Length: 216
Ligand SMILES: N[C@@H](CCC(=O)N[C@@H](CSCc1ccc([N+](=O)[O-])cc1)C(=O)NCC(=O)O)C(=O)O
Image (cartoon, rainbow, N blue to C red; front, side, top):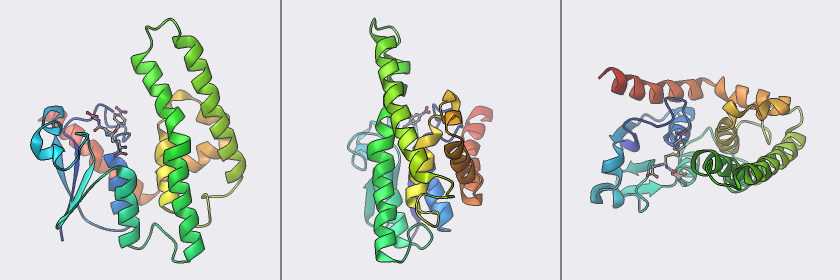
């Protein structure tokens, strides 16, 4: 059955692949599943037709037959459970890979998103500098712990998994900050993710949307 995801008609990330459809695209490319994309304007995302799919009026969503999902984490897990290539067959290894999905989304991503919230929405507040300093400290604590755990391994737990896909995707949100450079093994880890053919296909596909929108 045809898989259809939703994405920004014109992503605010300027084609950097930071919007969360990128994670779903990457997962589908890793498992070799073709997919269609329904591009949405910000206005359309808040209209009844899309709100029926996504209660918060966001992207991405995932549709396949009579299944409709939202939340990129849930979508990537669904893809990983349905197709080989993103979760190990071994029961315990599979559980550990899923453990890393949650670590990426629940432990690593919140302070990283908090930094973006501070920088984009709180710059005019009197307490901005003090709060940003605390947020950066929280990010560095998580990066330091992750760096220590990864060590010189290629991936977080054996073979590349959906846990790495999510963790690399989360760390990529720091790419322009210079903070990853403070942890050379994390920078190399992210670069390994970006070097994967599936990542490159997904990145090129999301960039093509913006290029078409810009020249259209
Ligand atoms: N928890 C949900 C969060 C979904 C979400 O945040 N979607 C965003 C786009 S991806 C988040 C995102 C947006 C922009 C950038 N960027 O770099 O410009 C990066 C990431 C969205 O639809 N925003 C529009 C709205 O809320 O009205 C998930 O993981 O799917």
